[in-house]
Image (cartoon, rainbow, N blue to C red; front, side, top):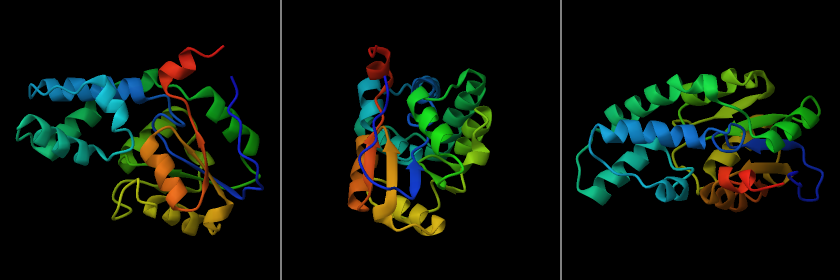
Length: 200
């Protein structure tokens, strides 16, 4: 399976991190379940993927509201990150996205635009040996409005010095695709793990 790109002479590639560069969503779900089990909170896998792209703190707050709980947001988020960090030796790259990174590296600049925390993004990219490929990292805390707002992608374009219309976004989550479209950028949708597993 290959990941076709839309037509255009793009001057920068902007990548979501989890589920796009890093095939980490299954590992993140295991980490979420481990952290939430300590509070007796359910988080169905379908909902986890449906909420892809949302910042972790926002997810904890939404689960509190959904289940009538009062989980401490920072504590749960920290525990989730601890469980995820333990799984980093098992992390792999999404092959089709890695192929585009290898092909275009050195020709055009790259940015990571993530809803995750900077330390988590950095740890994932370091585990894959890819951190030095990216000129810019835009992570949670760097912007006021998360995806699907275009702000994170527009910030990355500004930091790279490339007009939005000349950027191509790689995204696995609907929220991210919507954010890219709102930013006036073309996008490539990266298939979910089960979609890639079924490809031949």
